[in-house]
Image 1 (cartoon, rainbow, N blue to C red):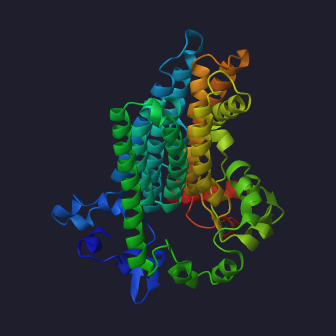
Image 2: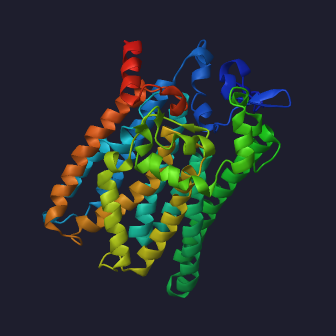
Image 3: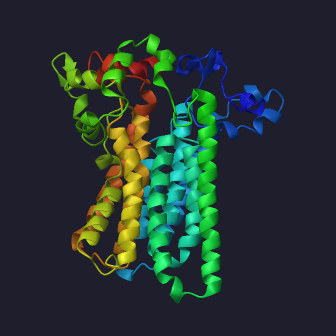
Length: 433
């Protein structure tokens, strides 16, 4: 892709992309964003650089960046930790390092590389969202960095980009309203500086939209089309997909119950006689249901717990969260970041890597909940024990699921499994050995 981009072309080599390509007007295109290709720009200047596979290195670098960003977020929200809640930072450090988003996607592939870098921008967006919500003075600077993260996400994985763009636009509307109401109370110098920063943030977002629109137009002939699955080369092997897409669309609200089951309650992996439970229903609405079975409750239970604490605090107007600004700012971010998660619940395929779209929302809610606990606003005797227990469970299951994910084949699990999941993984292990 980077080789073609440097020559002003937006198609890709059909021999390299294979059946993952999209054929339009005699040219083959990929649906991936261009950012992972731009990362390879330095490599092409090396001898025989186009033949160097840096996918694994890129995935490792993305994982390191993600860890450092989340670590910085943890330090920020626990900066004012009370002695009674000093355990929060210590226990959550293990969760960030050894479970959840940091561990579950470490399977080097082009699919995962795109998700990992999208998560880097997603976590960057979350970090500056935390600063904007918890310290109003940092909003102008935060909006600029949130814009950078949003553009990066949009140029990497569109679903993530839509969420960050939506969250920042909602926050921007609230901030603009707040700015206009308080303009008479601020000095002219402060107002001018804030206006300058707001303009920079808006300009970055607009540039990202124009870049994406131009790429879409070159690929699909329409600036509003991110991928045209009627042109997907894989359709030749799965002719039913065209009919299913035409009837139900790429996203359909009817799939939400199945999405909840897939991402949170992996009952779909249970066998009922010669078939998996829900198999007929899944194949009716979905193109693919991919292994391994997993649940956010097992891999990220501690962040879901703190997220629930934050929502509880908002609803009950606790001391930290009863501030009107914090409530409105947080709700703006939550609504925007919920969009990618809802899209994945409605998607025509249920793939393991799509869990990435849930993490910015999960981590934002979790970090905001941690900020409440760290300043002693939610003191319960059972909280410390439950938190540490969930951290241990998250570490065990995140690493176990990572192992079986690396044993899994990409593609529809319903077509791969004939003798049950335990036998499937046993055969896969023997094959690899």
